[in-house]
Each structure stands twice: as C-alpha cells, then as structure tokens.
Image (cartoon, rainbow, N blue to C red):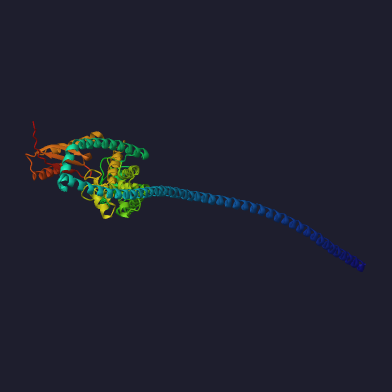
Length: 530
C-alpha cells in the first residue's frame, strides 16, 4: 500500500516535472517568437526612422543647395554689376581721350592745311618776284642807256654840265608839281585813313563773331563758413596757438570778428589765400584742430593747389594750341587763374585775348599761332606782380626775355598798354584783342561810378601840386600825365613834381598794381603874321 502511494506520488511528481518542462519549453518558444516579433517591429521602426532621416537630409541638402546657388547668383550679379560699372567708366575715359585726340588731330590738320596754303602762296610770290626782278633788270639796263644818251644830248645842246642841268631840271620840276604833289598826298592819306578804318572795323567785327566766349565775371572772396560760433574758439586754440600756426604756415592773416559763422582771410597773395582757405575748410569739416594737424592739412592743401595750378596752365596751353611752353611759364599761367582784374579772371581773359588775336592774324595773313602765343602771355606779369616791384608789363617783359620768347611776344607784352610804341603787327593785334576782351559787356564788374571816382581822384591829387597846369588820368587809371606851367617849373623841377604826386597817391589811394606818373614841361612861342 505504501509502495502504491509512493508510485503514485512519483508518477505525479514526474507528471508535474514534465508539465513544468513542457510549460518552460512552450514559454521559451512563445518568448522567442515574441522577441522575434519585437525585433522585427523595432527593425521596421528603425528602417522607417532611417528613411525619414534620409528624406529630411535630402530636403535639407536641397535647401542648402538652393541657398548656395542663390548666394552664388547674387555674388555673380554683384560682380557683373561692378564689372559693368568699371567697363562703363573705362569706356567713358576712352571716349574722352578719343575726343581729345580727335580735336587735337583736327587742329593739327587745320594747321597743316594753313601751312600748306601759306607755303604755296609764298612759292607763288617768290616766283612772281623772280619774274618781276628779271623784267626790272632788263628795264633798268634800257633806262641806263637812255639816260646816258639824254645826258649826252643835253650837254651838247645846252652847253651845261651834268650837275648844272640836273639842278635846273629839278628846280623846274619842284616848282611845277609841288602843289599837285601836296594835293595828291593829302588825298591819298585821306583815302588810306578811310580804308584802314573801314577795314579795321570789319576785321574786329569778324573776329568777335568767330569767337563768341561766354560772359563771365568772378570775384575772389576769401571767406570760410563755419558751422557754429564755438568753432571760432577751436580755430584760435589755447592761448592762440592754432591761429598763430595757421598764419605762420600760410602767410595769411585770419580775421575772427563778430561776423556770424564766418572767418575772413586777408592776404595779398591769391595763391596763399586759396591754400589757407582750403586748409581751414578741411580743418573745420574734420573737427581736429591742433598744430600738428594744421601742418599736415596745410601741406596737403599746398600740394592740391600746386597740382591745380599745373593742370590749369596745361589746359590753357592745350586750348590755345600755342606750341611747346616752358614748365615754369605753365605754372605762371596756372597762378593767373587765382588773379582777377576788376572781377575778370586774368587767365580766362588771356585765353580770350589769344583766340581774338589769332582770328585777327588769320584774317590779315599774319602768323596765327604766334599771335595766339603773344595774346596768351600778354598779362603773364600779373601772376607775380604782387611779389615783384614794378608794373605787370615790365615784369612780363623780363620773364619772357629770360625764357627766350620770340621778339613779337615780348613786343606785344611791352606795348599792349601803350607804354611804348609797337614794333610788330602782332603787338598791334594783341592790343586790339586786349581792348575787345576787357570792353565787351559783362567782362568786368567795376561800376562806372567807381571808375570815374578813381580817375577824378587821380586828377585832383595831381592838380593840387603847385605849378601844375593840367592833368589827365589815362590807361584806365594806370597812368596820370601832368602838364606843368613852364614859367613856374623848370626842367629840374619836374622831377620834384613827379615825386610829390607819387607820394600823395601812395598815401591817399588804394589801387591794384602800379600807377605811372609822367610830368611834361613844354615851352611854346606863338606869333601871327598879318
């Protein structure tokens, strides 16, 4: 019984063990399948996530690609625009150079044609002169033979020597034709005067029509505007060191007064005044004003002015086409752009005179280039007349003589204000062109009242000296001629009168340049035959 129970318990134990093993096996199988299913699900999700990441990466790459392409296109457009602008500027520079070259070529062609025509005319004149000389030689030989025959006949007929016969014939001829000759000469002189006056009017009118310059009037105003009144204190500086430095470097006086928002520059040298004006304008805009900065800015302004002077002189020489000019004279021409005479810019006036003189020379068959050269240089002395003592005429003659200019140019400078008689046709043309340029409407800005007042003052000063009979202010106030009473002033006394008038003019008048005082003493005796 016990054994049966033991067997049954063993059987049950074995059964439970088998069931447990079977259950574990089934659980392991189920767990395996569950794990496999979970792994497949995880793998599927990972693949989906990878696909999504790849897709996002493709979209991001495409977006980045589009952005880089857009930036590259923008950069290409900017570079292309910059290149187009640069090419446009270069093209404009090339066009300007081509225009200048074309103008220069046209001028050279015209000059070449003129020289060719002049050479042909000279050749023709030379040929005619040679033919005329041959004819005259033949006629002269015949005349000599006839004269010898006539002399022999006269000696034989009249029993007079050659000298006696000549004196007799000459006396008869003088008596017979003296009145007719005088009348003929007077008539021809009147005709010549009328012809010359008419021809001169036609030439002047033609020259003015061909050269129609604009009416310009300039004044040199040395005033620098400042933004506020506080800037005046900064310009003066601590204990006046800034203003002293600026005045010492430029040679110009700075006047800082109650004038609102302005500083006045005072100085006789227009170039120095312009340097000071530019330097002060730069300092006011910059705001940094101290001695070191002032030295730097003044040197910069001086370099700019020197460059401007050289360019202005070269442009004047190029415009007038007067040929090769010494660099020192080019600088003097450029300095004239800062000089004015009664409001008229001296450099523009000189260019205008050059063109007018050239036109007049071309009309009468003179050297047009030489006339333009003389007209351009006729006022060259005004570039330095505030630095060198003497009139601009004397200074100009000295300068041009030093640089070996042609005698026609020097003669035009010396005679264009009537200081001496002209010796060449070119000098006469330059004087006429100078008068045209100064007298045309709008050329000079001095009022008639001011002009008359200055001339009247000159004459009053001269008439106030003892022994003066009459005085005349001429040459637009550049000269005063005084006639003294010969019974009160002797030949030595006229020197004292001239000195007294000169001293009074210097004491009482303010004027540009110089004023020439000429004292004349003349003794006349008159009687009437009845």
